Amino acid sequence: MPYCPDCGVEIGNASRCPLCGARNPRAPEVEQGGVQHPEEGNAGHHVDLMFEDVAPARSFSAQERRKVAWEVLTVAFSIAIFVLGGVNLFDAGRLSWSLYPIASLLLIWTEATSLLMLRDRHLLAILVAAAAPPAFLLALGFITGNPRWALGLGLPIALLVESVTGGVVLAILSSKRKGLDVLGFVAVGAALVCIGVEVCIDLFARGRVRLGWSAICALTLLPIAAFLFYLHHRVVKTTNLRRLFRL
Image (cartoon, rainbow, N blue to C red; front, top):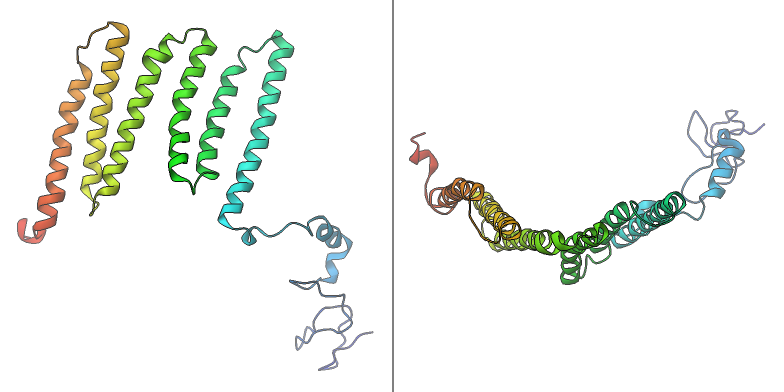
């Protein structure tokens, strides 16, 4: 029966002495990175063999983790697309309803690719992410057999929203001191989107522009944006608020 080499207590197959904590020289071999406890038995040994080639997540760099996530997403989406197409072909003899979810999955995959795999190539990532939604709308137009709405309405609105969003982001990033002006830029962008959407709808439906609801939205948002810019650049920056409000 093994005994502790330091205090002489009987320790059996324990890895350490329960009294003084000294290591048991006759305990099972110590694996790299930790002690193999005897109570784990053969089950623990089989688990170690199963995952002996798998590195811990913390050993991966950020780029490697993004690559792994992209690969898993790609495989999962490929299987989903294959299943959708196969079921549709088996049921109807041709691709019909499955084209809608397939196009949606391709849109998500493209956006994920720009975010995960093109993160270090900023310009290319932006171009890919911006091109995906208009391409998706065009694909839906051809799938429905009527691309007119996609070309005349969906594509212009998508480009409008992306352009305004890009302008708002650039304005926010170029601001030296961010604060209430961020909300002001967002309000201006929302007003422009409302006006642009109604213009696109009017041109597509009637061939002429007559502003209605978008003008009301703009007249509500633009004064709010102006007030936010005033507070940011004039009051908050140059005025002692305690003195201003006599606090």
